[in-house]
Length: 388
Figure 1 (cartoon, rainbow, N blue to C red):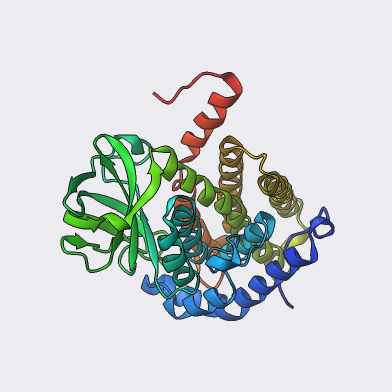
Figure 2 (figure 1 turned 90 degrees about the horizontal axis):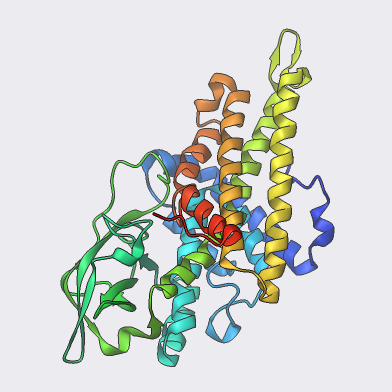
C-alpha cells in the first residue's frame, strides 16, 4: 500500500492544490528512488549523488526564488512540505537540499551582486555546481561571533585563513560560502573549488548522517578575488539569517522522519503477533501510538501556521527557533518510542527506525542546539538574555 502520511486533523484541507502537488511529487519520488537505496548508502557512509540531477529536475534547489534565477517561486508552505518528504527518506537528503537552497543560494540572492546572482544561482538550481556553507569552526559552534577565520585585504581581493568544520557537502562542493572577519567584522566570501590553499578533508567515523557528506574547510592564504566577495553581506546577522532559513526547513523536515517512524510502528504493531494476536491490541502499544500521532499532529499545525506567517512576512526568527526546538525534540522522541514498539527488530535496518534516530541526534544539534533555541525564545518572552 502506498505511503499516506499522517493527517489526523485534515491538514490537507488547508493546503492549496500547488502545495499538495509539490508534496505528492516529492513523496512519490522519495518512495520510488530514495527508500530503495538509502539503507545501503547509510551502511556504506556514502551519499546517493546519482540522485542529485533528479532533485534538480524536481525543483528542490532554491524553489522559493524567482524563476529568473532558476527558482520555481513556490510558497514557503510548499517548500516545507518538500523538505518533510525528503527527510522521510533520510535526513541526509533534506540536509543536501537545505544547504544548497537556504545556506548557499539564499545568501547569494540576498547579498550577492547582480553578476553573482545571474551567473551562479541558475547553475546551483540545476545542480551544475554544488555549494557548501562555512560558518562553524572547531572551537566555535553556538558562539559563531567568536570565529577566528580572517580575511585580509590585498591587491585585487582578499586572503582567507582559518578552518571550518561539520560542513555538509564540503568535500564535493564547487563553491563554498565562507564567513570570515575582515577588520573585526564578519563578511561573506565565495571560495571556488581548486583555489590554492583550500582543502576539504572528509569527516570520518560518524554514527549519524552517514548518508551525507560531511567535512572541513581549511583555508591557508586562500586568495578570493574582489568580485567573489558578497558585497552586501556585512555583520554576523547575515549568516544568522541564513541559519534561520535552514531552521525553517528543518522544522518541517523532521516531521517526515517522525512520520516514517510512526508509519513503521503502526504497521508493525498490526502485523507482529504475540500471545495469539497483534501487539496493537495491547493498551500500552496504543498509548505509544496515540502519543506519537498526537505530537506529529501538533508539529504539523505549528509549521503550517509558521509557513503562512513567513509567506506574509510576519514571522520572526524567534518563532522559527520555537518550531525547530519543538519539532526536533518531538521527532527524536518519536524515533525512540518507535524503537521500543519494534522491540529487538527496532535495531535492524530492515526497519528505518535506528537510521532516523541516529540522524535526528545530529539534526537536534545542528543549526542551533535545543538549548540555544530555548535561550532564544526565553530571551524573547522575558526580555532577558541568558546566553552566558
